[in-house]
Image 1 (spheres, rainbow, N blue to C red):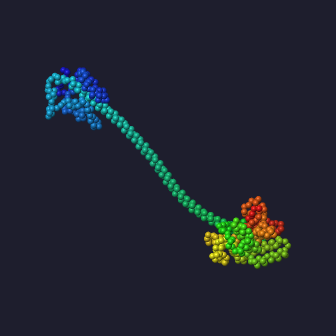
Image 2: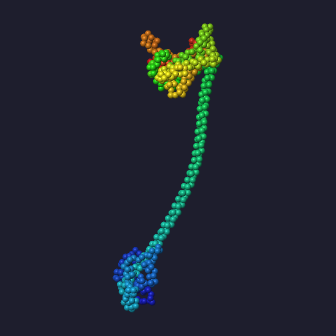
Image 3: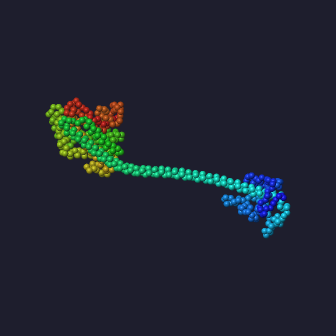
Length: 546
């Protein structure tokens, strides 16, 4: 204590020879050292002398406290916020260790400490020395904390800088990646967009080609339809030329083949069947209001009409029309001649037959005469042919109309045709005048085909006969049983239209003959009339199972 010196207003003191207690080594133990310092100072030996109070006082303006007073005793941080000292009893004691008198005057103790030469005041008490040591330790601990915080701050700044650099690098890499991805996608988009434009242009071209193809297709269809009509007309002309060639070369000894007649009858059968189906398929036949004269005429043509009218309507009507065609066209001497002319030619033929020996010269004379009429007298026979066509059509219409209820409605209303006959059945049963006119035109075409086929058969040297099996109705008298028995089915001359098999047709009876057949006698020269007989076309019939 007696070794202390004062040097000319200096704020420093000479330390004791005894070393002071070691301060806290780290910032983490500073707070605990603050609390334990006063008691340690009181119990320990010599302590380090404290600096002058003026240097630690808040009111002094000395150089020692000038730096720390602005920030509360701690150096400013780099962020601008002062680092405050911990609020410890030592700091409070330091701030209040120098009480002031009134009006800023020093207390008597201060005055005594400043100018007193009391050895006790110069040497200090142990309590004051412990407080000074505690203050020094606290200041040292705070400074150590500041240094630690600065190091931590620099470390954090380095870590932050590294993290910022890493983030900047990652951001740069991400920006480059997304920029390259965007560029690649943009290039792909431009490529796909170019392909899309090309595809659209190609689609427009294909659409144009499609329109051109459609126009060409329509033109081709029109050309094809025109060609088909032309082919149909040419086929008709070829068929007519064949018939004309057959008739014109007959005198030179060239006869048409039998297939020509078979094909002609087959076409006539199909045409008649189609006409009846189209005109009378939905017509209901009613015989209750038909007059007796008409029924007698129908019975003469189709004896079994009463049995067929309810079960086989179309077959009965076809049989009726076929009978009219055979009776008025195929059984005539030569179609186009009047009755008087036909009678004269028949008488002349009988005269020639009585003069010549054998049937061959007679057939040659008949064939030559009728061929001459067919080639050179066609214009003269035109009127009679037209009259016969009208008669056949009128008779068919009258009889078929008498069997239809629509005919009775037209007859009750007074509707008549141009010839004075009642309205035709197919005219009243078809849905309109255009269809009725087409149906009548079809019937006239069938009649014209029958006339042409009959003339072709008549000019041949061989004898061609058109036949239909005779079917008679059943009668009750026992003596007429054999006469009334229907004919049996003959497979050599007949063809069943009912769909029966061969076993069922064995011994079957004919109910109705729907279309005639053709039988040829003799050869192409007209000879061998008794030796040669050939069925060119079979008759179509409807049979009952045997």
